Image (cartoon, rainbow, N blue to C red):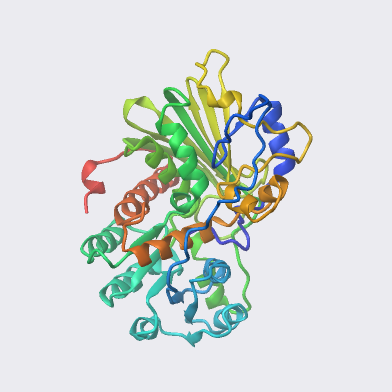
Length: 437
């Protein structure tokens, strides 16, 4: 299940201006969604609204049923409300209080407690499954069987066997029935944009990668009902959760495999309960080193004891390092790196200034609406919105998403085994057959 937005918000970071200033001070060249052309007077280019800019036509509405109305399910409803063609027709949870809370945003949606009622509803075209990870299998298989388009939060399941059953069912779908795993970076235009630089060799030979998620939060939720509290805190126990690296780190693990276009060969993990001394069974602080073919290693670190430096990803190359943070990207070139040409004219952030820090993938669209670059910088959308927007697009066009069943399954296998390594403090060698559906 993706990170619940209420207590582990991906956008709850250091303000963009101060962080952008730090990046500029370190020599960072911003990687924007569209490189500006060289100006006639030779000065650094400034984005301008294109009078000929036309937005892509909005496709027909896709009516959604949301199954699972915890923090992530409510965030899905919130983000769908921002899209012109993502109406929510039904909301579902087996806990009435969750339904009432979600209905505050989806007031016109049908309210049901049994997910099968959503699947039987002919008005519902697509479902988002945002239940706890260990409950995914039954609902996902039934939804696919019912002919619904399915957006399934990542990880696909909490065991490889369950994930394989889901992936196998999704792989056999008719071409026009869409399955998308909730691998949020794959739906993020900023990550797609940075991928172009990475794949064309702008950063040189990749040496290593690093990702982290730090947020001081107990990961625990309170309830006056002891039975309900146990259910709410499924992420804290080994039989229902694959821990920090599985429930959160899966996005960074998947991004690294996606960028490198390779599957990992081994993972070594470490985990401890350092901050939150309660009955939890999963570590609140973890580190893992994932090795890829050729000796490239990715290190993932996460703690619920400290928020410092929050969340980001770095790819270290022989010519440059690429940093991705809060839907923005920077490239830090080595002094001996070859001149690529375009970077001479690329806008650099002003130190201790908020002006010109618009490093948003949809900056062209925002500027076309008549807004200033600084305003564009503050309008980064939620990764959930980007992912759902792409899902609707794939449903309308009948095209396969980047985060398809295969990507979802491979990321889930990687995350599950990484969590095993963390839990046992050991090194695990990936077997090729683990990734076969």
